Image (tube, rainbow, N blue to C red):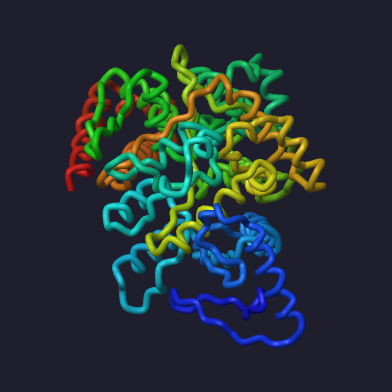
Length: 500
């Protein structure tokens, strides 16, 4: 008989450590009693007297990892103990580190660890694993009533198998919001006559950014062309995918695992005009690894990023010679003028490795517990992720969870979640379906235009130092012929990426 904390999983096999004494005997008796009370009709393959041990790989770090580990400990001491499930989690570092560890495990690479029972996964990585037959069919363990508790689009995203069955269990999701340095926004807005309403559309953000560049340039009349950028965005790929959706175009249309590319010139020109052009002119910018870094250094006032990035929004601006505290504003992410209110649906789910009925069943039992409203909100209050059940996405449920569990929630995370909850009924969450070479295609969206913009901005900045005006310096890069050259290169690169 095992003492609960002496259950270990070694090399994918369970090893029992002998334990004697009254405590073990008492536990055994209690477990047997629970088993007898479960009823003859119980179809569970679990036996509380012989617990099954599960390993989870994830990419959480810092406070997110601490929150996840706290919930796992709670599960092990409550429902896990009752049902006979013991969970251990391991951070693999970054998302890319996790993905590589999973690939190595699936391919049996020398020195690789054995496959975990559960691992965090984005859809593209899960799709690769599914193509290799490595994932359990979660539809075998969830009935329709259970599935209907989850946000429909989250479940749909997880149906990556050829037969439409579920492979990705939604556990925590995010979307995008806009965050603004309120302290520096207010004097600019008063002087320039702009308002937060102007930031509701992408075109409005561009107009405000132009005004901010001109206003900051005017603060130093003896130094020409030293205006500052107002705005930046994380995840340029989301700008493409969601921007096209807002304009009525699905850039990656996937049917039966095959992708059809939709790259109409007019819509892509609009994307180019509202990202590349302001980047080249210095109205938008990207300097650090993330745009929250650029707010911290005073190089930006606002950015669009993931809800989970709210915790990284700085508490102060740090300049070379001084620093000062700042307040913040959270707003919905801007939408193309006249477009439908689409917003990105992102965030890794959990997949279960194909093994045996007992391990797969136990894994799904844990995931169902983790996504119960209060448990999921407890994790979201720290991580900035949204809960995945329909009934949990409300300010009322969030406040109730905070009160019931006496949670300490960072104000930025709370404001971020409530902003999304207040808008969620009016927005359409979207993520493209998985397809072969989907990761490669997304990288084209992420870097092709952004890298070009950074390169051409450097050339414009050099021309400004030579005494040219901004319009003169930027002129060669913002013509229709410049767009056509980029457009042709972009379409070729995207076609090449999906056909590898």
